[in-house]
Length: 461
Image (cartoon, rainbow, N blue to C red; front, side, top):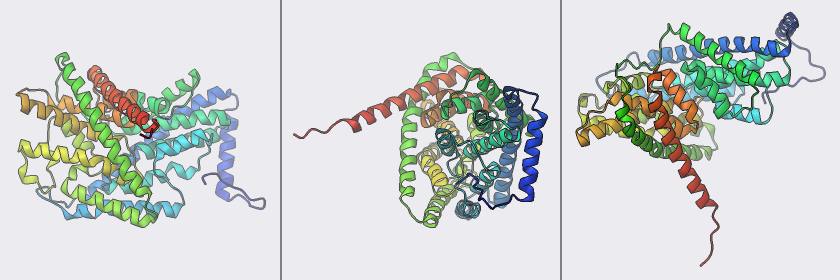
């Protein structure tokens, strides 16, 4: 349990007494402010701290990734990829056992806390999810860092609220602000972070609370953006203006993304259910780690978060699909490109389930952006090849990011703004809206049809 239980005869340690004195001192210093003012001040602190923590998470994931892959052969297969993902999942399980906390599925943990009105987070939940994510994703787990970032951000909000002497109702607001700030910092998407709290966590917030959420997300974005040297993780460098003549094709891409999202969700949920039936945690983590290792050996583009691959996809470059893979010498062959894209798309949902349900700690949003960029690239490539057209493949990869995220996560507004903000591509907002909207509608319609069929009574003949 995350709640701290004090026995009647227990005495607080020196560090606990010092922390309590600091919290009381901060609350006394700002006592002249009404609680609404203290919540606003807290939102600024929460945003800055969340921006720092997410920047550190991304930096360490990148550092660990470079450390384990610095000696790989870029011109062929690498047996090291058969070891690293398995090692990362095992280390993540060992770490969670050591700290006595289940840190997987950060978004779901946040939802459960919100439903139970449990806004008290241990301070260790600020850094423990991050450490477990470093191990899982840094060693190649095919997932992202959003779930741990949101969970850590919620813990930051809880701790800042206690530090400022804010009531439980105010603590609830700052927990929501912290969760949104975690997403805003990891994606450099302030509006996307705000919509995460409102659309995914479904928090009911007053106007004042929404204003605090905006402040926290903006502060987190600004902090992350400055620390990263004013750069974007997925930079759309191809200077191709938005072309309204492609709207019909974006609509068809939305249909493709919706159909793929149904497949992605099905395979991910199937593997998650199968892993959930495995009682022994070590059998679970070894089996999932080995499966991920085999996938990454053949398709190294699936290693880690995949931001580098996404960047190449939206800039119409397919080299990263072949680098460090057994298929390197087939680079430049359009049929091999199509084959590898198709294989990765078929396997990605399974790999994400393996990373998140096999004992690792990671997020599920970045993988949908990754899959979306590949889906858009594949769609435009096949259309150009089949009909002799010249659709801008990079633009379609960019639109696919929003399409697959909207279909798999079920949050179209958040998906639109995360795709646009993380790539600094607001000029394509109409394309994002069309692709994400169509994909979301298709997945929603399919879900309703299947649920109605499963709920229909069976009449004997």
